[in-house]
Amino acid sequence: MKKFLFLSLFSFVCLWSITCAQTSGMKEVTTQISTAALNQAGSAVQSIEVSFCDTDAKNKTFSIHDGQTQDLCLQFTNNDNKSIAISVDFVDGTFTNDQRKNRACLDKDQKTNFGQYVTGMDSSLVLPATSSITKHASIQYPKGMHGTFNGCLVYYGQWSSNTWTTDFNIVIRRAKFIDVNVSLTLREKYRSEAIILLIVIILALLVKWKFSSRKKESS
Image 1 (cartoon, rainbow, N blue to C red):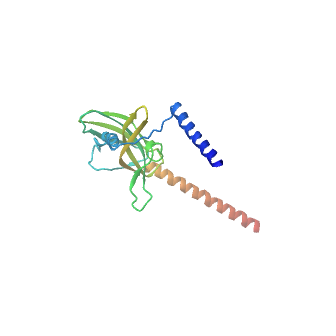
Image 2 (image 1 turned 90 degrees about the vertical axis):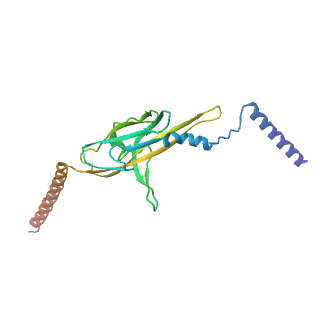
Image 3 (image 1 turned 30 degrees about the horizontal axis):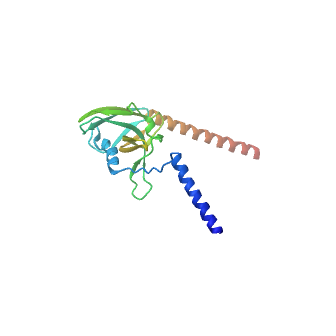
């Protein structure tokens, strides 16, 4: 009897749950991103070629002084028969944390060592069909900053889906790697050396004064 009551109650709860779900408009929606959608997302980027104006090399290395402004010339080529809109950004570069140590690009909000020192480039570009455009950016590190900094030029193609069941974006990103070797100017170098020398002299005088004080006390 107890088993019969339990089964009856269980069946009633199940039927009630289904009825409520149907009357309230609740539906189970399964979203699948097809291969065609991914191909469409990547087609914009795949049709774009980005190159440096003065070299055919895949990567670029600059050697500059602190405070110096370095021009970065880039050529964007659209090989498609229709215009394509892309997004462009400069972010910090890194290396993968494995044995291969492959180059990689950080997220767009990570601009500590490279991205924040590149200016002058439009963040959005519309590339006409089967044509090329040239764009310039400026790289400048502040006075006193030196070292080797790894960066990336990243460009995005985007495909959107807006239907009654889904609303999402697929973003495909490609990159060019840029390295900057920043050395101190002679003035900054001498000033740094002068500061170090002054610190050493001050420390030597303090040691000498302390030694003389102890000598007087002992005598």
